[in-house]
Image (cartoon, rainbow, N blue to C red; front, top):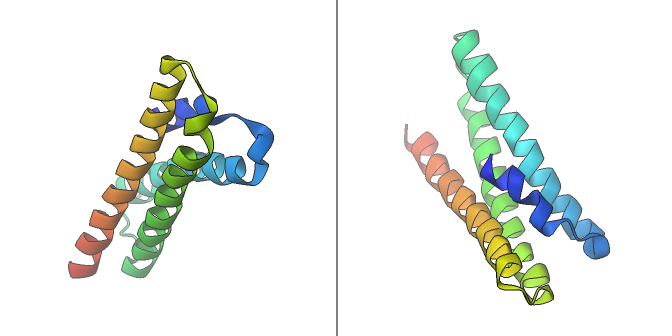
Length: 112
């Protein structure tokens, strides 16, 4: 949820394809993870197939790490005010941390 709030920090539309990747990753994975965890896992009591779970985890790794790298590359040098730079660094750190969590999740699912 913190990453979704930080979308406003990277709402610069001068790099529209990169902004779409980042906003799509953050919003899409919030919806996907909430749907898989709440609807399928908890409410229905169903297990998600291992291959689908690995697919989402690997895609999450790639998308979140690339989003964090794009945030650092495109927007860190664009701001001169420290508060804006800090929010960009926070957004990139959360994206990279989410990518690391998905990497760990991939290994846990693969070895389970």
